[in-house]
Image (cartoon, rainbow, N blue to C red; front, side, top):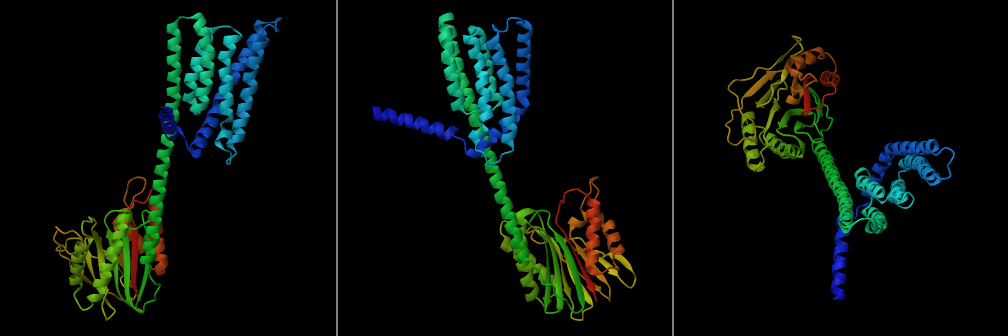
Length: 461
């Protein structure tokens, strides 16, 4: 029977430990919060002590000896209050102190506040006033401060026993029973507050750890993606290329690819995967591999046939993934003058003519429609061919450029992009890209980026 009782006690103690034992980080957080509250609350208690001392000096003029205990007690409010403030300020500056050390001002405050009902009980001999003050302090202290239920419960129990002996002598049994019930309510109040603080801490810590894990995964995905999309800084015989890519957050849903054979440029791909984050970033790596293979396997095929095969393969290989993509696949002819591209639901590029010193959007074909990766929607990809002369440029971009918004909610838009390109066309290619990006960022100001931004400029040497 004794062993059974021991097991029950152990189970109860184990449950209490699991439920209410807070990690050191949690107790440190509560202690820090107590120190901040202490600095705000103590001036009121010091003012109460000053008021008590002044009242005694005025009321007991000429008979201070009779009021000496009161004088000492209220003086302690001033001295201990200042001590608690100084301790709190000092401990807040110490980062490596344990929670038990940082809790010292809290325990000191609780001790001298709980001394007041004892003072009223034994010196003033007022059981009723002592009960009222005890109740006010015991109820409100856990509201404003985080205090261990062990410390709180032990102190409350000791003072309750001192009060109950007086209540038993001066009042009836019903008052005594009410007092016992009130003490149990205090225990419950303290345990509940402490348990809630512990649960909140663990919940927030889990959220923080989850966010950290997600951020680390995004950083890792970004490193992998950047490594996968890395392009060699090749100087091509007849063409110059410069580009800019900035993801909205970590991993980009935009991707570009440059297809070449030694110093011969064969093509460019610019695509924008729907959605944002890791999912769209992973899709870019899947579809990049498909586009790369189909482009090189179909060198002798029509460009439209290549894009059709890319669409079919992507729909098949992505399975239940919902992300689709828009984009432009460009191929350069062997004569090095003709640029052929197919626009799959993307923004039409801009053509800058060096001879005519003019920049205009290439006209779309009204018969073209569809994007890549939408199995239930028909497509018709139309080929466009542009004859390029020395100094001519084609500027490809994703909708993150034209959809960039400022604080007034205005889009950067196609007109501003066209003007920026025309204004900077006489600059070196890398400077052109930087100036266009600078115009976009100046327009956006402090507004957060809402989409990935990619710009590519292809220039005929």
